[in-house]
Length: 298
Image (tube, rainbow, N blue to C red):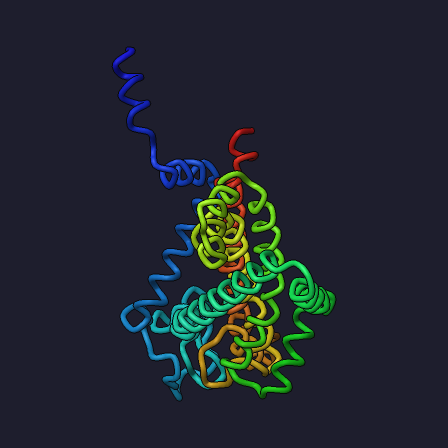
């Protein structure tokens, strides 16, 4: 028994394995991760998974209902839209657009948020005041309204909508990075690095930043769902992706007039948005519980 205890003490578990074990305890988050992986793989291999091309029109199949409904066809499992395009194929290709754009938005917001947050945390005075007051002003405005104003200035397109969502999400990462960095600056290991002669850039990116990543990872996961929802909202308002791009918000906007006589045209793109946003929120909650030492010790 003593030998087994000594072996286990000499070979401690990896922190990543401990986080994974804690994450798996949350069944909802684990299922959400599986759903996200399935949707991500479907989007990545959309050319092989989708039964039809997203812009292909079938002149003999306008507003065909789903396969299980009356007058439905197995050729179009989720039915077709008003110009004969397969809804399932457009949803699958739309996942590629939404996930790739959402990933770009979150990565850009995270990168610039970390940069500005670290600059603010390491430079008390005018620089800190200017950055934080600017972030406060941005947070005071409704996020979707500010995104609409930005896209209205730049012009409606998917790229401009993504830029607007990056700007909208930026204050959350800046404030979180600054708060986490300030809490780390007074700790012994940072003081020891300063005494050892570490420069400001080394303290920022090598000493302090790795210990601030846990809350930033959680915020990035939750920000992914917000980015997808904001991009869909801008697409629904005609300010995001433009037809015939298979984007979920644009699909909802173009099919809104058929909601009473062709429910499937609106229902399935809306369900796709709901499932993805819910899955990322659940996964973010699971990551927060797994990465928070207070929650794990409780």
